[in-house]
Amino acid sequence: MTSKLQAVRGMNDLLPVASPRWRGAEQRLQAVLARYGYEEIRLPLLEPTELFARTIGEVTDIVEKEMYTFLDRNGDSLTLRPEGTAGVVRAGIEHGLFQGQLLRLWYQGPMFRHERPQRGRYRQFHQIGAECFGSAEPELDAELIAMTAQFWRELGLTGLHLQINSLGSREARAAYRERLQTYFRDHHAALDTDSQRRLETNPLRILDSKNPDLAALIGAAPSLPEHLDAGSRAHFERLCTLLDGLGVAYTVNPRLVRGLDYYGRTVFEWVTDALGAQGTVCAGGRYDTLVEQLGGRPTPAIGFALGLERLLDLLAATGIDPSVARSVWYVVSTPGACRMQALSLAQRLRSEPDAPTVLMDHASGNFGKQIQRADKAGADVALILGEDELATGTVTVRLLRAARPTQETVPQASIQATVNRLAAENCP
Ligand code: HAM
Image (cartoon, rainbow, N blue to C red; front, side):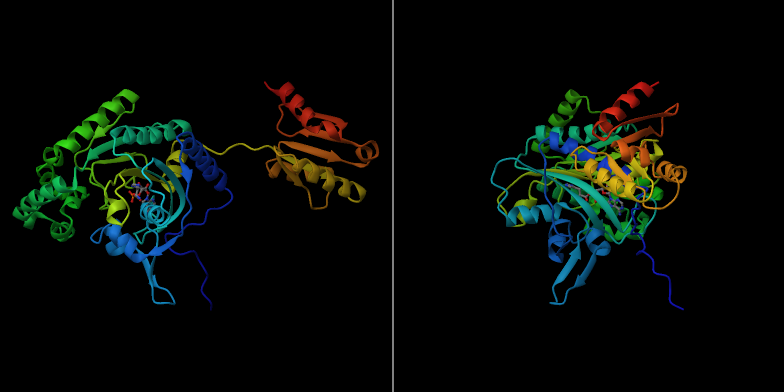
């Protein structure tokens, strides 16, 4: 017996029933991005494996154990992108986009991580991300974070909380790393195996541990803010002042370190407790040295990415439907000559740039059956073309969702005006 073919574990189909909500959310986010001057960049899903090792970091969870990596037919090692920042930086250097002036880019699409699937955590997931290059000023951090706050306002979401932190300069972080290593080495036996491994490779990530048995130990660890360099401290204080001025509420979380190596100074996460364990909906931070590290000219930068599955889940949990409503007209006709007229009427209506969706009934059956199908298809207007209408060059416009039965027979040229008038008359 052949086995049933199924989607790859952790990779979801997005069915038509859900796609209007996705498209609506995406459109609203894109509209905000446009207002802040961000332009879209579209990049390959596959990149050389080395790109991710050199950006995200050799000893991160993503690079160590979550990447979809394979040799292609030429023997080159390629990886399905686990995130978008590395590719944007690669493309910016390759195409000479970093010329000193501010460059604002956004992207959207699937990312791939071989994680253990659960609610809010998938192996193919979708991000909308934004990256801004060319300024190290905290004003840019504030503008970018305020833009993410605007996302939630635009969608009507209120249950997200902003956490921010500063990781400091590379040098300050290196010094802190040593302090932390010394502290955790002194408590080696109390660490779990994951943290023992991280102790030598990436001790800051121990602070991120979700193991409740380690909470007290982590709580007593040397704190990152106390080890910040003066420049980073001033930068962070200024950012806090700016966010206060903009009315963006936040919590400083000194344990927020993020799971990717390229960050320095500002990091932030928008979290909710409405989604269970995977509550981070949007996350990002500064990566002022990454462009130079990859061979570009020194270009400070900050960005974030938002997980669309988590955002859509949160919207559903909050009872918000971000779909952009679209009017549907349904052309109903009797077989024969009327059908031809109906086809050409539908064709003509759809050629208008602001046309609604115009559906044609392609099954046989009387008007009653066709109206039932119109209703099922979600139509709000039926356009009826029978022998009488054919003879007089008219059409009968019927509102399907009106409180009381409403229809009128009018010349074909005045369909839109009639729909508008009848709808207005029917408003409660
Ligand atoms: P990240 O924290 O790895 O950062 O991912 C950003 C967001 O993507 C997460 O907060 C979450 O909403 C979503 N996400 C991540 N992994 C999964 C998954 N397995 N399933 C579902 N959603 C997921 C980055 O990717 C950075 N590139 C963000 C950035 C841009 N920093 C600077 N610029």
